[in-house]
Length: 209
Image (tube, rainbow, N blue to C red):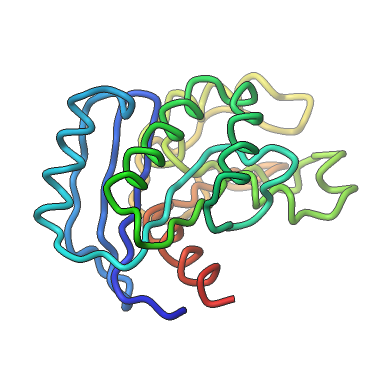
């Protein structure tokens, strides 16, 4: 099933980001809601956003953890939702709001396919030795810590000298780059993410298969 626009729903623990991504990877409409996704303010914001967005042929939901059963982008049904509820204790701050956002969006857009894209799919696709014995050849920061939390990056690296890491990182990052000092035993890299674009791409891939 080929789709044009994809609504991406990205529920954080206390925020909700809504983006309509076009087939060529452009953000047609975006809104950030500073409210818990399982509260009335977020529901009202979602309803208003959908009214403004018009027809949406597919929805992609970013979910932090898929547990042992959901290891790739997956079309949502009752069985998938049950698996996500079982995985909720693995990420207790993020999973309940994400589930609330999925249910609210499915209620409003009941006739379009919904897909979940799980952050843990990356780890599930790693070879077992790499997943089990996670020794750095490099350390990569991404997501929110990579984008705008230099103090966290610094604290992590300064506290892990036994792994060959050290502090003194470049704090300001506006593109993908190495932020450790020249000659560092283990290079530290920041990769900026476009999570909404990735979720949209995985949604299209899941619906096409």
